[in-house]
Length: 386
Image (tube, rainbow, N blue to C red; front, side):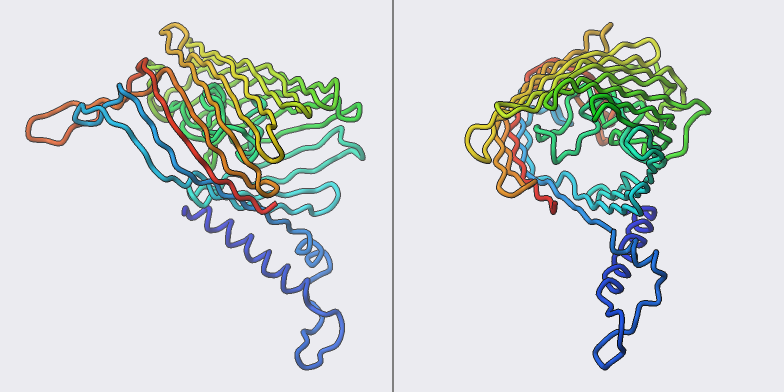
């Protein structure tokens, strides 16, 4: 685990330890076997009592078959593995009825994902501010927890790429999060909601790579309790940290235009749930666009059918498009705990390329986008405290 992760975790554990100790301390008497009155100030005791803990883990098994993917020596290969995807600790502290703080750490990756504080300025929910590191508001799906998302590989291909969740190597793997300041609120009993943020645009645990800032907007309209219509957008300038397999002319260290927008809806009714979005992005002069639809239909109590279709074109001019389909089941055996089994089809993949040098180990030369069927069977166990 990184030093920063250890530092924050140590602080949180100390808070928890003090909270437990003083919450159990009797308020009077010093007879043998009893503790004396707490020496902490009243406000410190109150905060310690308010600390809320949540945690979850996701692990499973994956088997992938691709008749086109080749290993370093050019041999076709299948792939299977048990994997631990994520182990999260979440510490939330409602300091008072307006002021809130949050800390989130992933033990699997050793990365501090979130640390932020928010304050509600109005008596209602019309205006709040949040500062720190948190999930940005671009797209519906990016704001959702992996414990809520229906597919095992989490977000759609478009959200994963455009929101900075991993496949856009120009920005790197940032888990859909960034450092910045966000204003938010809602009105008309929650029918209208908004978020407006100014952020670094560089991702987690990093200072900005240039002097530009990203601006993100998010608008929601809820005509009925079951239906939510959402439009989001982002404008800014990226600072490349790696080369991309989809955009070959942007070099590491180069600044480039990085804009995105999306429109979609989410329906949560008794017969089924459905979420769909259209997404588009522009990196320098390269356009990416796509759409997805993901639905859940209950079969019997605790057992659901999950289906998803996803189309994304990483580079419209170069026709780097991919179709993806997911079908499977999930069984909820306790609150937010479930077992998932899914089949995943993809129509394209990234191929690792090597240069063979006689008498030497193969030299990795990069990845190339290739068309070809890719099939996978995935299962996952999810356990969450709350």
